[in-house]
Length: 319
Length: 308
Image (cartoon, rainbow over all chains, first blue to last red; front, top):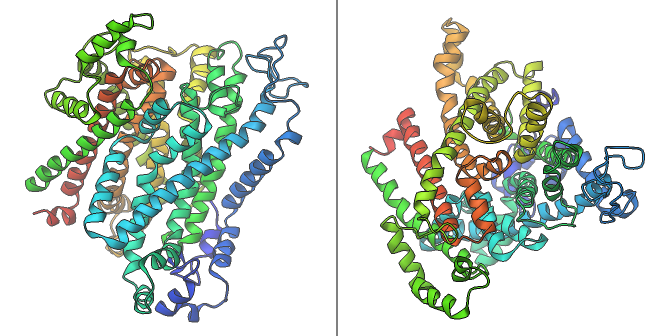
């Protein structure tokens, strides 16, 4: 797929994947790797350097930046309002006036897709933040303290994991109602166990290292050790999972809206738009087609970036 | 090994109790009065109140939960608020359709994912590899309900080859199963490729080649066996994910499975149906994962040894 990978076989920091961020000095001292590095770069600069060489990842990043800019400047970019109906021009095919046609209520689909970036990005990032913060906290506590607390937290996570994520999200939304905020919370909660497990695994491997012992020896409190020393070093897998998590969250939210339980009209959410167009699949297929393409492009870009980040953050995983 | 299986089966009990508790709590706090739903909006207040008492809806939360569990253990999940039929009966009559759909989807995903993943790994960086990996990424990026609609558009509306909804023949099954299986096929392809790439670089593969073995023998007998171990886990996890994903696919294709039943039940606030449905899918998911773990131990002697 990309030949650059081969050139980059010998990364200067074999341990970089697990020693990014705040505690880099300690990690460097522990394994003595910094001294051997041929080029001296910061840990994050190193990751960025590797990521830059991955053409597919940079393509994904570019697309995401464009989508973010679209969301920010939606008012300028969209030719029409997302809610102005024109009942004289319903379900029209793409034309010069309406680049992607109009929907079942005569609204401009192109404008609605542009405004939809705001909704999908919000859902994606907020939902993942919820799962990362809650899951990260539970995983860190569980991994750091072990014992009974660990047992209780992990059994709770097992229970949540036993319910297929989309089903859990559906149940939560059905109880508390649809709407943007509830969808974000529902999707966020349903992914907590994934992050709890990932963070726990990294915390366990980190907490035995000498720099943690050193921090403890100088009298640092547990809270400080977890947040200042352990978690920054557990960031790599969280970032990778988080990037892909944004994609999954956007898909789940769209799925909820598709079955009518998620974000409600007239909010221009892509899944809800698709759901509205479903009835017209035989007569006006463009209504359902374009929002789906918008979702696909966004998810595709996020996945490319996620793959690239995984390779860049943990070079040992790379073939 | 048997002790391991029994221990795992016993561990399912608290997990299912937990699942019941979560689902029961969610439904408990969902606005809507089951008695009113049963009798209709215009029923007299006194009648509703009487039914509430009769159904035990005025009991404290924990009492209600305890009663739910006690009945559930005996196979009684209550009656649907709308059809008045026992929930378990309705769910089990729909379950085979969901299993059929999910199993076919897994079959398609495996039949595509494993061979493509292996070829991609053997010919790393070839055109085939590039195309397969790009397609795989497209496969995980498509919302499956949208893919379903697009397939209906192409194969039912334009070409008229396949029925757009319903159940009955193999042709009815094809589109929903492909729709549901696409993202799993993509994930299995990616997993097989990376696992295979890792194995191919091992010393014992070099040894096998150095012995002068035919490349096909090296791949089939030596590499594949070890490369497929992690793939099996992914397949198991996918099967579980598909049970959940079926909710959307079944809605698109009007497939009469548990997923669609659940969506309708949620819309109509048919609480007993939702509770039992989530529980059923969670049990199915956990059992599949258990079977995968056991298979895993059978295939990999290193794991088996741990449980002797």
